[in-house]
Length: 376
Image 1 (cartoon, rainbow, N blue to C red):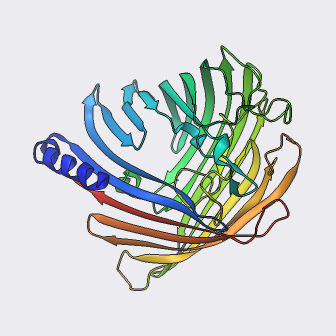
Image 2 (tube, rainbow, N blue to C red; image 1 turned 90 degrees about the horizontal axis):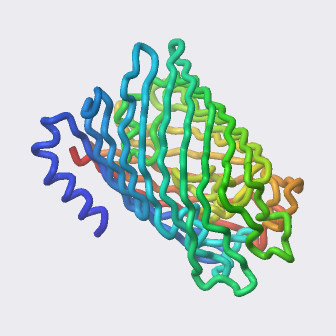
Image 3 (cartoon, one colour; image 1 turned 90 degrees about the vertical axis):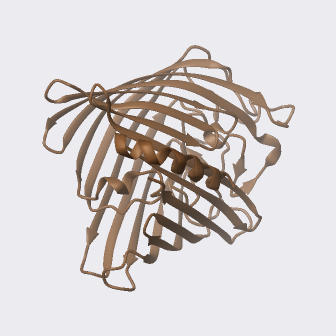
């Protein structure tokens, strides 16, 4: 129903907006853990983008479930510089902290509501073909509320956070721009992109939170939290019927907590994918994970694809006990389809997690279903 309403609103807007350089899309999806217990979480989104609207920059409006994002993108500043500024707010579900998983199983009494508003200024310097340096100076305000939290579970402190980042991007992707609309939940990558960044989060208020006496090291952040991150996305076409995609993520953090750690697990576009595990089954700041997928087109010249992906690597503190130097393997396999008919895209994934010593009640299976449409 929400997706239908979003499509209707975008369609009503399309007759005038399209002529003025706007395009819009919508999508919805759900990520389920199926075995050993059934849990799940869904999303619905729509996006409208107007080209050359403010100072030759684009205007982007995005609604995603509990998030509203307004952005002016890529305003030219001279020959090689661009400025982007965004304002974003997320209510109740931020970081999926409302859904607490431990060793692959949900503990509903430990979830809580998390919300924020954030200003996101960014300057990019395109100093050579395919090469970009960027500086981000985000300012965020976090605030929290109880959601049947265990009485002995202390919530984080409400806080203002300054989040500067220095990043480098190599971007040599040939995929058409339409692949990066909101309706394309899993863009088809042709080419190579690599990025790296270093950043610090400086908070106005900090305190230990969670089970402070039982797990004193798990969520006891410093006022300054450091992160070193690197990622790779690549895709290659090998003939008319087959292509490969590779995704890789490395992250190393210091003095972090579950607000800033990466979300690992699930089959949706908003996590580091590990098939078979629930959405955000793990929250880790020190990890090295990769995903390789093979995509087959059953008919030459047709856009439908199906395939197999394998993902795995290592994460720290897999049992979520505050043992930050405890590393363990994680991974899984998934079958998937990516079906496209004109403006419509349909996605389905079914995954199995590799058994490990830290996962309870093996085996673990999960699934994902999604729908996207280019409205105008």
